[in-house]
Image 1 (cartoon, rainbow, N blue to C red):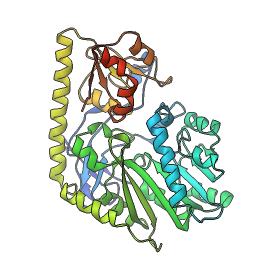
Image 2 (spheres, helix red, strand yellow; image 1 turned 45 degrees about the vertical axis):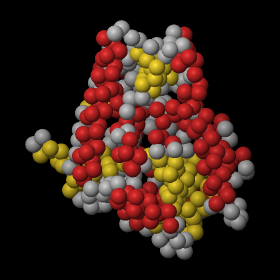
Image 3 (cartoon, helix red, strand yellow; image 1 turned 30 degrees about the vertical axis):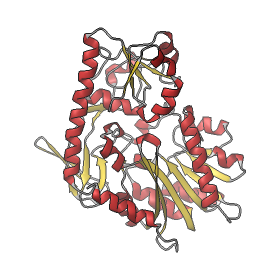
Image 4 (cartoon, rainbow, N blue to C red; image 1 turned 135 degrees about the horizontal axis):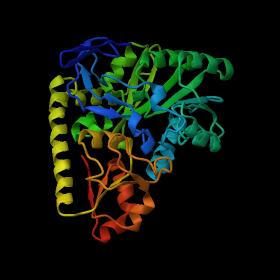
Length: 412
């Protein structure tokens, strides 16, 4: 799909979408798998890669230079389950309701497919309403949770071949949904060709992912990790899928993941016209200068300043003998901890509610991950909130921590 070449100390590559020659604008350094929580016996053989973001000024696509193979990232012990958050459960309930009311209205016996259905948090609402559905999920452990919630699920990666199999067995889909998944897939041509086969002529492809405009505005560089091979803007989505036979007809900002965007696409020959919002958001992106390389060079400087401030804050607490722990062992935290070189000397442990992560160590920096009960047992002086995008829900849940004098630190 693309070529990579070492040129002195510069790393040059071809854009994964248009094959234009591009060069990373910064290097986060050696990075482990974001969800690669591990045991001490695995430290010696831990996998690392160079995390280098780049921007293609030809097709406006923000991407990372190298992405580990999907089989490394999405395994039978994948430790991310969407339904652990009440806010995410509510979000996906509303997403399902929106799809049923707006895109399935008037359709007889509709068929819904979701790419990357995780633990079934979205499709369970279609299952409960007796709507024909199918989830595609490569991680067997999360797929099993989905099936336990009544969601029909195939444990596979999506492809043209699988699209043909689904059409032969189930028929064409009215709507294909995806949430926080399309940005994981380097080969979007394969996805688009599969969607062309799978969707009805008047079908909709609706997906949402972290939004580039929010990441740049907030300097939320923790959105950049192995699974996120792309961070999309509207312009990028329009350019990518436009060349692959689709048109963007609507876009809606979402609060999830620190700022996301939901995109609605149809086949190019569809009679559906783009909503006025598309033009408005494209104009806003132009004003934000998301199309200019200089924006990403400024982002690099902001990342460096953010790193410096965080490390200084933690070192100051350490100097005065304060106890510091991390709250939520997120995939985002892997980028922060490794980029800032923050290990167990600065953060005692990270508490998390996911059993698969407890008793393991954070990727790369090897900070112990302990159950949430350890946080409650003896409150620290300071808690670094790595799940900052869920701060409203967490602050409400942990009000007592602040009452007894505990302080939160947002890492970005």
